[in-house]
Length: 101
Image 1 (cartoon, one colour):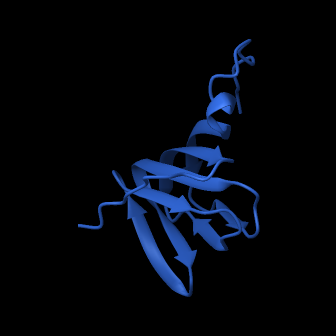
Image 2: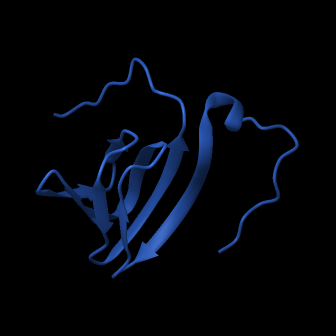
């Protein structure tokens, strides 16, 4: 894991973004979240991930985005590999729309 040094100006934090990263995961990676104090936004840039939420399994593929509001319960499991970027957003998002087509 590598991370850049903190910037002297808190550009993202001023906009309510607590954490942000570009990440690559291999098969077998698993994470489960419940009752977090941040909204989670991820965008898949390669591979796929299996999202388990509300008793359903959804495969998120390249070009797809996932948004979970704070306090949501879900898990993510990588079957082969998953390249993505994500944000932990502390402020409530407004005017947020998802194209479901």
